[in-house]
Image 1 (spheres, rainbow, N blue to C red):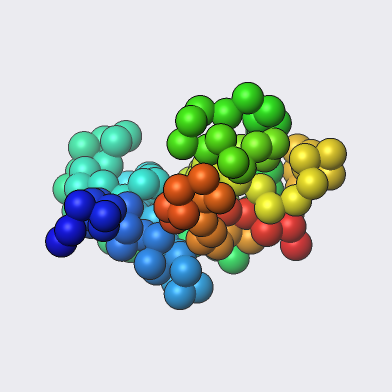
Image 2 (spheres, rainbow, N blue to C red):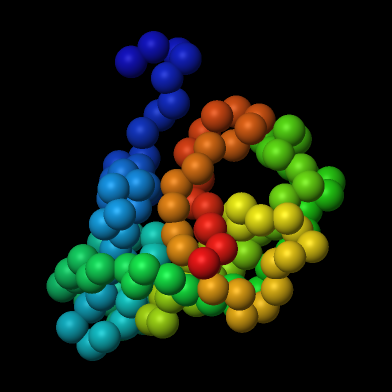
Length: 129
């Protein structure tokens, strides 16, 4: 690995790889608690017996914020919308790929993987349905 290559976060990057391939997932314990990002133990009950469960193809925007003054790592991306999207048993945060005036609570979106304009780093994005 060279200094130019980003450091790979195995859990998160594996999740992004699966999402990019249309095989997004979350982890679920035997008690039915779902969680994202993928982790080794259930944050609800502490169970280490987790299985990968397919992420639904679509979710609904639960809440969002319009970002006009971004952190430096997203300087060239502004303005943009960051949303928390409800996928039933789990919620996922990412950028919505729509005009910020068009985003609203309850909007149906599909998860995907995109890149930041600022650094070209991968991130979770949502495409309107």
